[in-house]
Length: 351
Image 1: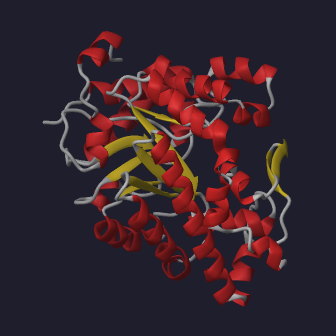
Image 2 (image 1 turned 180 degrees about the horizontal axis):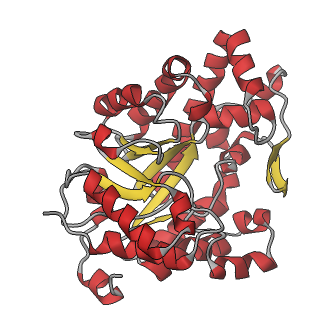
């Protein structure tokens, strides 16, 4: 892996250049959920604090965010937070006492639906103080060669949580709501999109040099439903945020509707981050991030090196490529496998 001395000597920011489509000498790398349970140093912090406590303490969140950067010399730090954090500014209670998020919200009530407001979120900016302080702290702690990433859930992913009240395996309630109340569903998606623009803007002002939208449940929708109900609202977010900072759109269901997302990327200039079930060759000519299968990090270092090299080769030296996983890293990932992946990417040079 790169030495700290080399990183300090070279203040060129590979990530920020690449996310804008530039052709750089090497390929930047970060990975989703990189600040988390696979790291022994994170588990030491977790022994002493609940997840809610860590989210609410900017010093703890800053430390957790920096842990993988210290260990692997990655190109970008993604702030330790949760996609539910936006709900703090919408006065929607949630907690993680059962493991996953549980929301106290009734979408059938008009008063509850009216909470989905960009104006309310901006008025509640102080409720994001620990999160925004974490962004400022991480930006201050890192050299200019390193990037800081903010993020938010996609409107569909967040609205699904609001409808279901918790993580769902089927999302049947969400799809039923979409079919039965099409106009209301579209209105709520727009409300969430507007709030997301305000939320990402706060993160950029605090020091994030790029942001990522997480579409965690895109694979539960048909190609037609995704194109009609979801992409217009993602487009709205990108068009309003991208003048401030580059936007990466992670779509777990890209393998189901990649034709539409490719058209979307060409139109908006957003970078697409795609899951492991699709070949990177399909995204020639657009900016793309991905897409190693995270299960490989539970295998062997040799297997990871081969797969990482194949993923790099699939991009065929095109500019505008960031290496990442096709989904978040698992708690069972082996450190020696993570090291093999990072070392392979950092040793890679374009021809």
